[in-house]
Length: 118
Image (cartoon, rainbow, N blue to C red; front, side, top):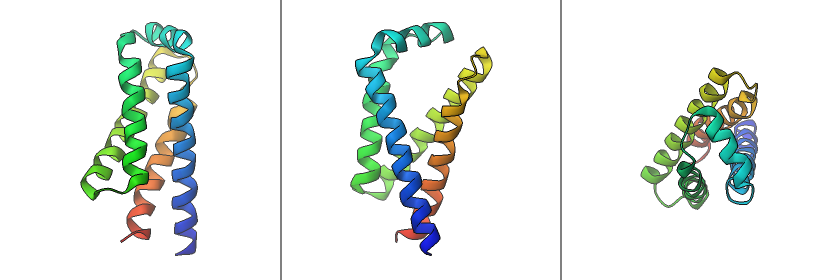
């Protein structure tokens, strides 16, 4: 059980750090992120709502307000990371590694969290 707790807290902490880094760039390095979005063919008006959604997802996971809300937060992070991975993969910019790491963190945090917490 101790290994599962360590895996849960480590993966959740790393997921949080990665998402906070992402949100920081969305809000404070907007021009560069907008350039990446345009290169991938996505509209730039998605940047701020996605940053807010990531922050709210982290609040839902760490706040532990309700199981339902936490499930939706993990689902949102899952779909976000899968879609980010394939967006980077399809344009061939070689930046899909961060999304792959985030996907691993989401999955480990979700499944170990189900076993650690009641």
